[in-house]
Image (cartoon, rainbow, N blue to C red; front, side, top):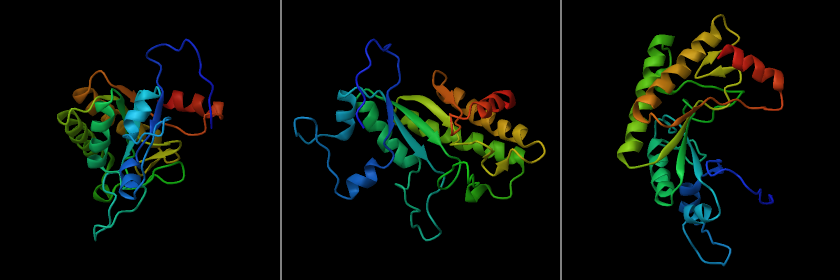
Amino acid sequence: LYVQKVEDLPEDFILGMDASCVPALEAGGVKYYDHDGQEKDVFQILSENGINYIRVRVWNDPYDKNGNGYGGGNCDIDTAIAIGKRATQYGMKLLVNFHYSDFWADPAKQMVPKSWKGMKIDAKADALYNYTKESLQKLKDAGVDVGMVQIGNETNGSFCGESSSAVGGWKRICQLFSAGSRATREVFPEALVAVHFANPEKITNYESYSKNL
């Protein structure tokens, strides 16, 4: 896919991409080269080509009881730190995409992390707040330049085990969003906070999301 250069973009226009699988790909032997055929750190190549944000997904505990990863890069907070340090090295900000699940969260599945199963909403909100704050503090301590924090992934109708179709569902979902936002503000007060919904072509859905939020 080639996109022609758009002229006169403002300096703060976000040009980003997800690089969550880079460590796993590199571990499998993948190498990256610039336009001149010189091997380089892929984050350097991205920065040199105008990328200013790197997005990385974060799963709470993407491993089974035997320590085997679920796949998809096994992206826990340690992976995010490693990616974030490389992004920061080349002048890019990090977008931390918390799924608040142990694996993929999307409209079809919003599974609560193993360690949060059975929690009532207040306890779950506390756990989400503490996990978010602790994770972001680790990134801050590592010197990572966090520019945005995404509270959830494709949370169209459910989030972290809570369903919008249940009585009071959106109220509980928003309680969790607020817990993650509060933790973000306390660690990175200047960072943007994003909520995340799929299917932007469905305009009426976004009217409903806005109303519920």
